[in-house]
Amino acid sequence: MAGSNPSSNDTSEGEQRMEQRRIALANGIELDVVDVGPRDGETLIFLHGFPESHRTWRHQIAHFQDRYRCIAPDQRGYRGSSKPQEVDAYKPDKLIGDVFLLAEALDVANFTVVGHDWGGAIAWGVALQGQFSKRVNRAIIANAPHPAIFQRLLYLDENQRRASQYMRGFRDPANDALVREQGLTGILLKEVKWDRPAQMEPDERAALLADWQDRDAAFGMLNWYRASPVVVPPLDAPYALPEGWTPPALPKLTLPTLVVWAMDDLALPPENLGGLEDEVENLTIEQVSGCGHFVPWEAPVKVNAAMERFLASS
Image (tube, rainbow, N blue to C red; front, side, top):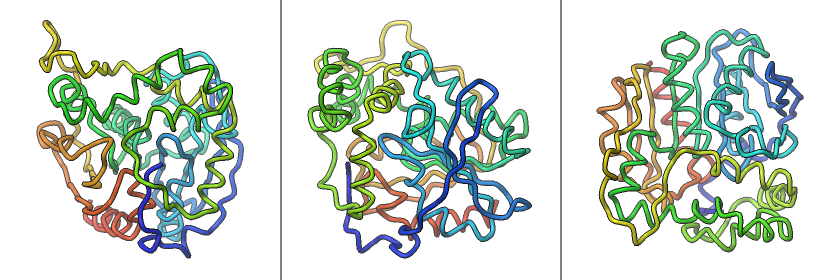
């Protein structure tokens, strides 16, 4: 886990305990979901990343729930939510579909999608699809690369390729025995080289460590990586685009989009911001200096302020 000085956190907001309820989706998946705030207010759907939970967004939900309906699932494969064990169950189209089916199950006609890390990757897909159906109003994405940019960087940029080698380890079935023996903690200690010493609130960290001991959840979380079409070349592969490679055929995102980027993220360096203006028509970028990967809880005051400005202006 990455971490930061806890003095930067909105501790009073972060300490709240959010009740969840079980929501059955039309595809058979069941998600544990936080659903708070006024039912007649605008809806924000928060998507967490690896290897966390809905509590990634504890500070943001506490801050916005007086005015917005805040919905935050534990996504497929995490904690008490459904954890199918087959890799194909975690293909991006299924994960994106879960978000729209969750909105339908909760009678949400349209929403702003908010995502971090893997949740941000899914948020890009939700926004790209939802702009045509008018289901999605806006996108707020924190430290999650645009799919058209990330793959190119993995081919061409030594910094990003080196930072992403852990993904090769997460995909390697040779590590499965370690996961069965030690849970997710074992493979994190072996493969993750880019984290910083964890200084998360002790109770939050203890809860995560307990979550990581669920073996079905551990493999569910790893399957997000194993089902992804992203190619991570080894470090000794040429730094060049493969012959015949073409970027994914994605439409330009026209929705108002806020990208919050922690500039000291060692897993996803700032090079991921390059070229975003070519992919997103209505783009706002907020850079957060002195902060690592887990920006929603490492720098919640700055994230909340950026969201406030964006929501008010768009």
